[in-house]
Length: 247
Image 1 (cartoon, helix red, strand yellow):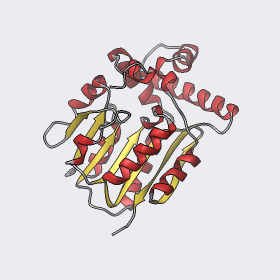
Image 2 (spheres, helix red, strand yellow):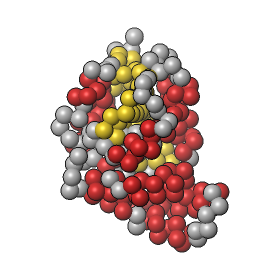
Image 3 (cartoon, helix red, strand yellow):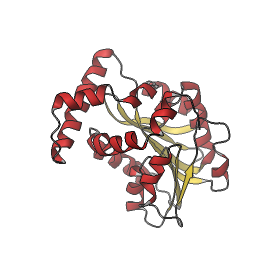
Image 4 (cartoon, one colour):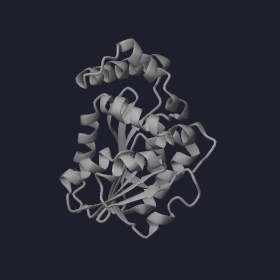
């Protein structure tokens, strides 16, 4: 583990993980649209999905969506947080799936994956933004190496806002969406309480956001094709590309 960093400290807490999964994950704005775009991109790539990788899997939301469309596929889920993997284990029995404890910020994190590569699809959701920009580029290059020719990488991610005002609009959208989710769950939190928990929650200190335009440029430099930001609302983006050559 990358001990001593805000990211490592906060996501090793079972209480924070449960708070995120119960109170935040279900309230992410346009979450269904983001996942729908991810599955559409995989479908339009017209590849047989025999094995896919969910990098920074959390509780396995993206993996579950892919398995719903590709039930015969083997899912490989990677996360550095043991509490997150605990949340995923009940839904992804091994075999046929594999859950791997690894931190993609550490040297050698890819070693347990090399024997499982190539992957037809690599997805990631709200994970890589915790890494430095230099490390992000390294992760994207490693993803390219792990993909089969014609395979696709889709990153559902939190990106840097264009201006502080855009960031403010994004925060207000999140507060409204999370508050509505609490109301659906029957929780009696006020909007002000939700705002305080969202704006000042411990994991926000671990965010290292990069503009989506920069990240798409990095993907092109690595060799990905058909690179684009396929979906974006304020700080929420779905972007990625395919591995050349396309069969």
